[in-house]
Image 1 (cartoon, one colour):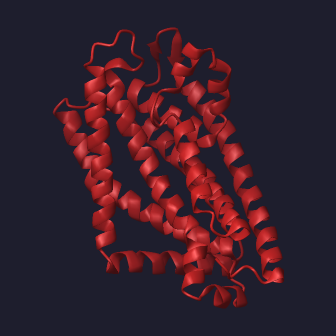
Image 2: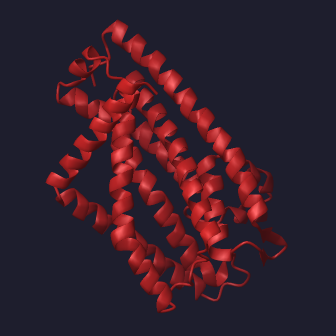
Image 3: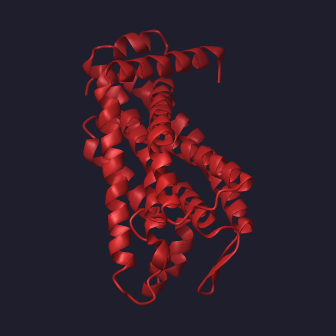
Length: 291
């Protein structure tokens, strides 16, 4: 990344954070949305886990399963939505032509918005949500998560890989905006599919009961799926915990991190390349500023 790109990225992040701070209602709205998510999934997990269903996967840890999924996805869902909306918003403000004239890369613009949204949501999680999760664990409403120096380090790595992958997906979705213009439903569908295929709503292991075990293992090559699976395994079950005939261990987590990390980097570079080509083509044809 060139010095100019770094400067643009830094300025963009600073501007977005200042705007969000000025309009504090956005912070309140995001916090309320996150609180509703956590409370809803806690209640759902409690109801299902205590329903007496025999051999239900994750059993008494279903609440933890759902809460970890909420914490994971809330960061990237908000960042994705904000990142995808950058180009149409700048076009609506009439600033897109000025941005292009000053040779500011649209991918830098998207990365800045994606980064500022990630920072904002992460601060909300750390300041408001994690203390509540800690209190719920202390009062035995939630099982204490397996927190060790190793799990903290691996959790950080998992979020970095997921961030790189979701940035790539956001740039791809923004490219669809450049091509198809009014592509809101399409970009929403892409986000929803990734969320669903990650096992956010249900454990992917249930696919084995339908004879779809091969599909389950293929899904782990999607970085968000593999990283969420690893995060849950590590924080809920620890480094070695049998679940039926299956085992969760750090060796498997490390292998998943390496493979999905490589895939995430490939997706990001491919997204940057495609965005550059499509943006240049749209600029030459004079359709880049129309949405």
